Image 1 (cartoon, one colour):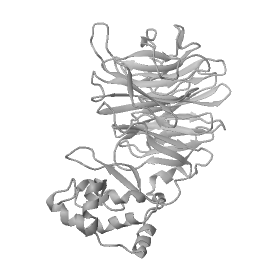
Image 2: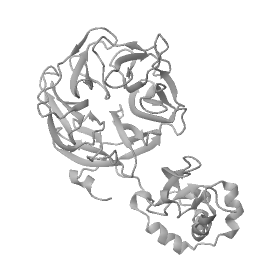
Image 3: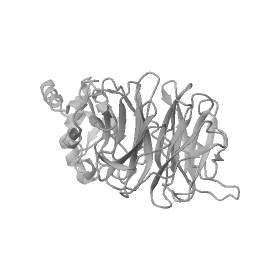
Image 4: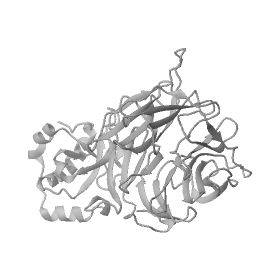
Length: 443
């Protein structure tokens, strides 16, 4: 009998390594190994998180599978049925405590003992969903708790893509629910895009999103909830020419105005800002596109509240760097767009001004691909320090959203391989600070 998900040719490799299963006979809850979950019958292993060593009684090794070669511990690990393990347990040679000690001593530090400094929790908003793909998550704290949303469907731009929501109730994320779609009055259906959740100081919870065949032709929509995201009003179009926040959360200014970072893609990539006192009303103000003499082609700004009426935006761009602009009058007049020293692979980012005045940025610290995904911190929005690496293995980890909750913790959601939304919780007071080039060094 061969191990599940292995060919006959793999069997010898399995028995060669299966002795390591005896590690499960020792209870070591403080040690973790990467856990692979079946993706489909043809490719049965996908890294999904940490599996306590105490549950290794269900783990087997398959070193022949090409997908396992990134695993620094044992090439590939995946879960086998318990009954299969029980049948085979008698064939496994015992491992001594000495061997166990040597093995544990050789594990990477991040897999043994304490979590990385500043990490409070890591979880998925969902592991199973009715949609094959998902992207562009958003997160908000409202009086009832945390709410997250994203767009999901067959694939980005497919007409069946809708807006999905989950609430975290009693410490657990609810099953995803589709709350908005792009069906029009004539029954034509368009894809939905880039939801943005926002809780104003007063009034209902807001869900901004876009509908349309493409980013060049989409329009802004708004839905509201008076019960913390449990139920939602039908979506309505924003006023003509207003998109609302195009990817990242708005901020509330001292004047009470809600300021939204926005952008358009139909006539070059161009950034502008939109503001309003009552987002549910018709009286919006829109700036002219920001000056882009260097043709940096920026979109999707995130807003930092520097001090008083001073603001700064950071933007995705096609220039290989994060792009910035600043305002000293509460967002009425903005400086010309200019490049920063931070890399950008033409992928979304987000940032938040913390309660202590520092700024926290979540972005891909690379000019190519969408891994790694990193956290940097700055005192002034200009000089940044490396703080935390959320992901650094091959794959897509992108489009982060970040907030600081009332208890001071930082919540980040992001796209995990287009299959899930991952939720990370950090304590900004415990995050380490290092030179930015630390992100370029292994480990």
